[in-house]
Image (cartoon, rainbow, N blue to C red):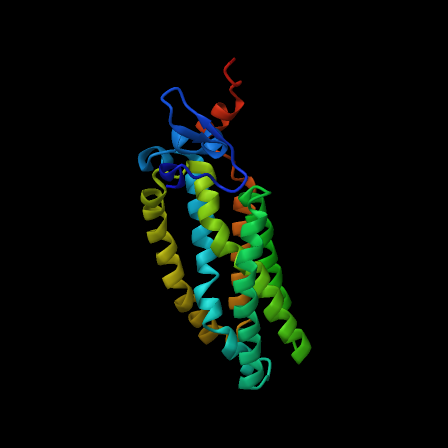
Length: 238
């Protein structure tokens, strides 16, 4: 950890504890002293809201991305090259978006940013279902890349903000299997709906709904009770 080497996050202040060890603002607020163990985390409502939000988002991720090129070239009649440009625009702007969302997380609560990002992702998918011109297709690639880029960079920041850093790996180890299971089911679900309907209308409507639901779950997620109580305690005198 940075503190092991006497380092602090950018802009952080260092205070010495009674034992002479460095202690930062981040630790005072929600850091190692108030970190949850895996056992403690799984007993909170916050943890299961995040599991649900991340898993449902995963359901609307893998199957969707693996089929949208076919959607553009099939249902929408774009050439393979034009569809590839849209995918490239998405990848490029998703990469840059991670820097932007990460920088904003230094100033704003990552959960609030993630609510905005997941809602924007759902909106971009709704927009995609109306695309029928090349400029609209490229605009979708930009919009979708900027919005979904938030999900990948903010996910661990939300976890660290609510449960601390000390046991983050073991806590994520509980969440990842659920995310992987839902993500692996996504291509099967999207493909099955396409086979049943002959188009992607229902499949992509479900994908958009997954992101809307994930955004709603994140919106109503609150800090674990112990963390809220600790934050409400007055600072000791002196």
